[in-house]
Image 1 (spheres, rainbow, N blue to C red):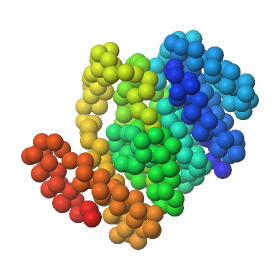
Image 2 (cartoon, rainbow, N blue to C red):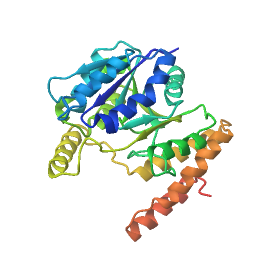
Image 3 (cartoon, rainbow, N blue to C red):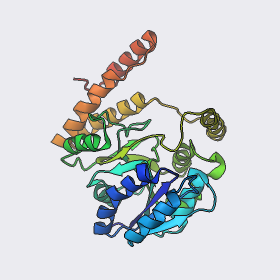
Length: 312
């Protein structure tokens, strides 16, 4: 089996976030022999001590405390440095794994082509093609909806322009070549986009594992404050200065790209009922996630028609 290791990065709200994340993934990780390292990024509350207590009850879990808030990039870099697996899985603490998600991700790592360096699961909250519009108001009901939708494997990886790093698997060789995440982005935002673009320059692509689902609460470490908005603006400027030719597609564009990839699979004879089920949901999403502006809405519908994808 492909050697993988998980790094779960937390910042505050241990009982609300990190505990649930670890509870969801530890049983599968232990069963699969996958080491899990939980990093507390100098939480402003008592999360560090709570994590240590949790680790004492779960000796299979390694715990690492940072002396200061290193930001998303710095915290993950520190965690990865303490592992030696072929694939490293970066995990935000505001996630919860479906029971079979880790096994399906590891399976995807093992069958990925040599040029696939980044693999992300499907989720309920992301700004790219990893997003699925699922029923449910709570983590449990959303995960249950995903379980019904993903009951059968598609067995495919779908290329994507970039991956969302709420949960992502990365080849160790690629990580080493790029020197990890860039800490210039501070507490967070755009370091994942930057990593994906730097990977592309080396000839590595990102892909979506169409069979694994990880629930994502989204933006749980920050509130929508003036500081956060300023950080987003700052990091976007840094990102665009480094990657002036980068595309900034809307989530609907990425969903359309997935549907186009589906169509190519179908034409090549690589098709099954699981893909058919995913295609139907994404087609509904395609025609419901419309621009607000009437002209842009008309242009979007024309773009969809020209793509030739099935929308019904």
